[in-house]
Length: 384
Ligand SMILES: Cc1cc2nc3c(=O)[nH]c(=O)nc-3n(C[C@H](O)[C@H](O)[C@H](O)COP(=O)(O)OP(=O)(O)OC[C@H]3O[C@@H](n4cnc5c(N)ncnc54)[C@H](O)[C@@H]3O)c2cc1C
Image: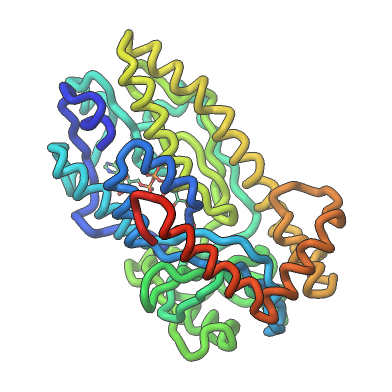
């Protein structure tokens, strides 16, 4: 899309192996900075995303069905299919050809292109075919997770932890559209096996998870896309890094280049940031090889910072059973600060305890509502 906007002489084609509207995964969260970044480059697209997104205004942590601990903060969420459709429609209006149902096999198949951008996700075929040249490393996390959906609307970004006979199991959930929330379940491999998930078909595992999280789901069902397709839903997260993102005229962006654990909800922001950074270098003109090198050199530090924070967060969840011995509010603070790695967070405790109490008695939601109403009047080309 941006290539069409900024390189008007370029002939841009997108190959998408799925049919239009088909997508894996449910909703994703993103911060306001994504709207700002996109808005600086294409205000109409930022406006479309903002109008289709849902805003959440608090984070809740519920341990063993307890009253929620309020962590504050806000963010946005949007269905993956909706986001893809917004980008696809904008592309087509700008004259980009999208070839749905067409698989990109290898860069050799695309030999007539001046530049091939591999945005084909974590399992990128384009990258895999040249894994040696990219120096691809794939490290597997410890905990299995499964990406589900539900019709229960979680207004706050909610983390729920439940004890079972085989250990703790938890979910991360948030609303992304009316009657639609993402619901990601995670546990240790020991709990996973102890609960018999290794022996269960999709139907049985969904019913079991509904029973474990019944109090949170309030009668709503869990929806399992992968199960419906007859695929294995559980998997450990795979952290992907590459020594280089460029090989000749093939350049990696998004999950093809790098992944960051889902518990920091930043993969989409990174993928969009990569695309912006790449086009920014290309629009400067000059030799292609130099532009691609500049893209990588300038973009890598920001990406690596996210990957490091994501590693802290993923490790924290892998060791969460120790943290669960604390009282609920202390546990909530620890979860909030998980990205910072194993360091003392007590300095912030007074402040966050205040946030928790103010939210519990309803002061902050009202103050925030008024602040947002004022801000909406004052600024922004988009409205939310
Ligand atoms: C459980 C979970 C939860 C997550 N939650 C969040 C979140 O809340 N917020 C967030 O920002 N990120 C989240 N992420 C990460 C986010 O989904 C990814 O980082 C992001 O989608 C990466 O975008 P991408 O375009 O690089 O890859 P993808 O979104 O994977 O898109 C790749 C596209 O390429 C197509 N494709 C693949 N191979 C080929 C081929 N050979 N030929 C043609 N087309 C092909 C695919 O069909 C797909 O449309 C989550 C990830 C997981 C696993």
